[in-house]
Image (cartoon, rainbow, N blue to C red; front, top):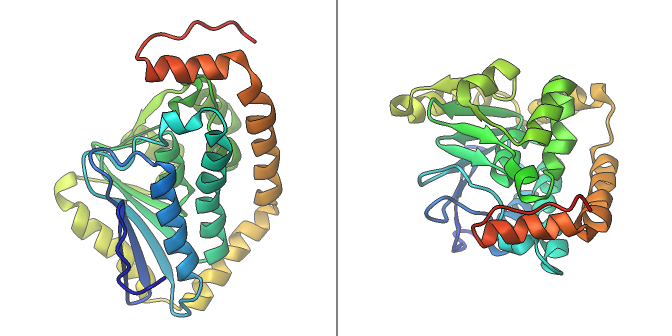
Length: 259
């Protein structure tokens, strides 16, 4: 990326091997295609940074992110939306560096997936996490990919199938996040947490992350392809997916037909 390139919806900083990506789309950082495109452009550019050892994702505003723009789940836009949405995660994998999310406020839907996909997460007491997609007639593809690998299968099913929202303490108890801190000391706590990794070798950190994932022996990309097929070829062809999304946009209760 061009140094100091001006983005509309994000802020970026690269310093001492730490790339910081700040979501900055008021008021609640809803991820639209344009914003996710900017995130991807930035992540793509980081591939060239030999000295990179850490990716930090944070946000300004009332929420970390309230999710992906619901209007962009409709019609032909859904293909583009899924493509740019999933590209964020594929690029995070391609960078190979450890990632840390710093969450203050709600991380819901695609915003929850973005935070929890990071290798480590620090959150404040007022943070909330959840995948409410099922309630608007769709499913959370990244959560479907990572929740059963991160937490027990029973709880993973409950979170994906019921769409419940968790408090930061509940997310901590499940092992979805690393640490809960008071909002007032978030900046100091995050700085201290990040500092630990800055003192270490970037190449060794990358290899240690790779080895940890290799031990799981999962092909994440194959898994995600299978999920995308279900999402785009089957889910989006149902009456209820369309009804749920439209009902949300029209601020009414959906009428399910179970087809």
